[in-house]
Length: 578
Image (cartoon, rainbow, N blue to C red; front, side):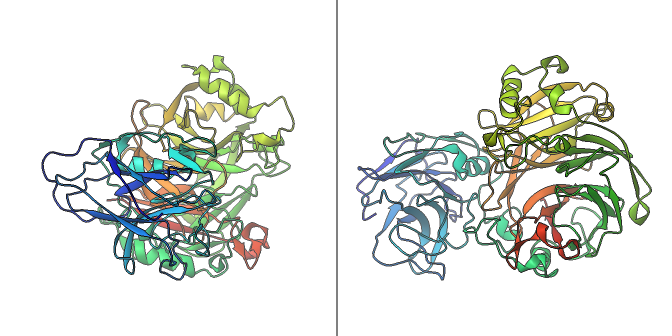
């Protein structure tokens, strides 16, 4: 990129001058790139940009050691008199964007001391580890891919084609998700002409109570979970101390109450914090690699206090792939993925919905199986089992499950298949739960299915499904769910429906009502690069304890989950909401 010849504004500019304010990461977002002549890009203002606001753009790569490569231009754009209103789209004529891969980086400040506010990569499918040519770049310092930066799958031309109305945070999350983009080597997809930015949660990732940078020392976003070599899984203090120091002091009193919150910790003998429920000041962890439930004391790095092997009680021969759990009184509902394996093969042990009984508390907790069913999914595909059947959803689920066929490679859970990853209680006087799907999405929205008789269904009664709720999670699927009795709200972690190279997760709050939208709260990562997969709300507080699945994290070249059981570790993290 050597120069801009024109800038086109395609939404109304405010008539009165806008008040001056600092430009933060995520206050604008790049929504398009054309590298086939004529070269163009565009950005949307997600916050008001006062007159005189200057933003610089370059396609020069950022080096991993800091600093730009030399040899390419940096161009400044300045907001005109009257300022630019949030929702305005600015289209820019450019030159010399390469159709062999390039990037557009937006920043304020100077070339030698930039503050990055958004970046787009269109070389390969991820940010490079370093800027080694005119075509590639490391992720600019301070930005988080999937939050205020995006790495597209390389195409000559690409445009954001997702939602155009929502809070700044919701729009930013949608734009930073490449599932919401359309790319082509032969045509120019059209980006939106304007957006409607609704008042609500701010977009800025600089907001320390919500950004990933306030949570952990974020791992390099240029590595995938299968290629990360992270010693924190073997060294119990590293990731935990990073997170504890930036989120909460150990064993502190929560700001909103006198409840003491135990610190973060490292837990032994499994790599997977996939599902969990409270048991007093302890929690029961269910992982997705074994059929063993383990009892840990929260905040205490140690081996499990107790273990229960559920293999025989649940009629299993192989792993059940437990994904989430919900405690309702003295009952625990436990759900497996109900998805094929990674090769698209049906494995009957992966289809379990169980009811367990809990007695005692803390170290004295006991756990036993009350009953289970293997036919929850088969019934879900039968419209007669629904109070309000959604024909489109049921048809999609049939297409993505194909239970009559033993092997369908493209129906692997992280491809075009089916995968349950969320389970949580719903509000009301009767016992109901929500089942959240990671995959599939419908019209780019997550699917949440209500089950009206979960305790009975989990012990063999015919399930009664209420309705399929379509939640806008910015093109992501459900990765974890939990109900908080403290504020009578459900918390949802959303994430990629397929591979998860950046380990970015997005927290939402929802009141459980079918007609209500989920509120975006922020993007989060754990420094290990593991997946955030279980939510434990601390009663009486605004703090969530999140368990991390670190099975795919490499420890000295070996996946954590493949280490001897005695050497496996997983961590937790704390998120305190304002």
